[in-house]
Image (cartoon, rainbow, N blue to C red; front, side, top):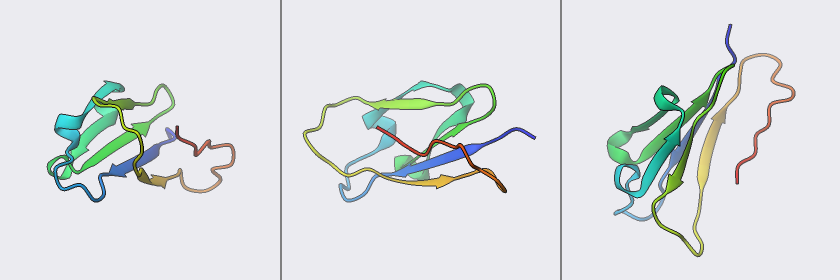
Length: 83
């Protein structure tokens, strides 16, 4: 059974924000998906690779929220950091 970590990122606040227009999925192919009319970005990883994205603009400050779903059972050793 492959390990899976799921990251769901949502834009909060700005009504004009949209993942379709504001970010590029840089790697991960099918492990990255933009959903909910561009308001959510789903990143996942398996035993072979993960996924990533970058914004098309630079920001002085902002807010970044995420939900992480870990593998069931013993998920000791899973790194749950982002930068």
